[in-house]
Length: 434
Image (cartoon, rainbow, N blue to C red; front, side):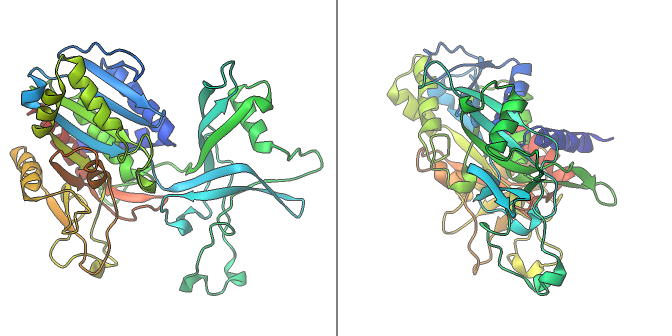
C-alpha cells in the first residue's frame, strides 16, 4: 500500500473513532499526548517555555494546540490552521421516548446543522456524546463520554407503494419523517426513561436519577472505505470537516519547530453558526493567543505586533465538480477530486481569501510540487459559511480559506480524494515548518 492510501485509511480510522465532537477532541488529545504535548488549563497560571508543546480543551468539544517557536513572538507571530470538530446530524431531545400504538418505541430528535436528510434513511445508526452526572458540587457535575458503537436504531423509509411520488421529490418533515425507530415493545419492556437506563447501564451509573443531562447525537455505524477502480476515493461521513482536523493535526505534530509559534485550533459548532463559547465567533482563540504572549513575558503591544506577523489557514472542505451536475459549478473554476487542495474565493467576503493570502498558500503548494485549484461559487448561487470570516470578527489576521474538494457535502456519506488528503497534509506540514 502506498503512503497516500495509508494516510487515507488513517483518516477513516480517525473518523470512525470520533463519532461526536467530544470524541474528536479525545482522539486529537491522544495523538497530541503521543507526540509530547502537555495539557494546560484555562484556570491555571501558565508558565510556558520556548519550544514547549501544549494544548487546551474547551467544553470537551474544542481543542487548541500550540508549539512555542524559537523566535520572539512579536517578531515571528503565530502560524495558525483552523478547522472544526462538528458535522451535520441529529441530536436527541430531552424526554425523547415516543411510543406508537403501544408497540413501537422511537426517539424524538432535532436537526443539527444542515444534513442531507434523505441520506439518513435506512442506515444503521448509533448514539454518541456527553453525559453529565450528579456530583457533590452542583457547580461541577461529572462528565463522561459515551459511544454505544453497535447499531441501535434506524430511520425507515416509507414504502413506494404508499408514497408513489417519492422518486419525484418530496418535502421531508424533520419532526415526523426522520425519527429513529429503537425497539418493539413487549409485555416485559420498561419504556419509561428507557434511554437514561441504557446510558446508566453503559456507563455503570448506579442510579438513573444521577444522570442530570446529556448531549447525544446519531451517527452512521457503516464503515468507511476506499472506493473506485484504483481506490482513489474516500467514502465516509464527516469528511467535512474531520479530514481537515486529521490533516492539520498530523501536519502540526510532524513539522519541525520553527521561528514562529505554531497553532492548531479545532473549533466546535461551525455547522450551526459558531456563536458559542467554543466556536469561531467567540473570544476563545483571541484570549489564548494573548495569554501565550503574556506568559512569555510580553506585553499587550507585543501581542498586537505578533498578530500583525501572523497568518491563518482556515481549513474547511470545498465543492468538487459533480459529474452528473456540471452546470452547478462556476464556468471557469471547476475543482476536481484529486486535483489538489482548493483555495476558496468570494467577492462577498464569505471567504477570507484575498489576492495576497491566496498567493501565500499557492506559493506553499508550488514550493513542494502540490497541485492547487480555486473555487468560486456560481454568481447566481449563494455559498456556505466557514470559520475563516467568522474568526476575522475576533482576530484581524491575514487569512486564506482552503479545503479539499468533495462530493455530497453534508450527506451521511461524503466522497473525497485519496491524493487530495495527502496533498493538503503536505501543505500544512510545510506551512508549519517554513
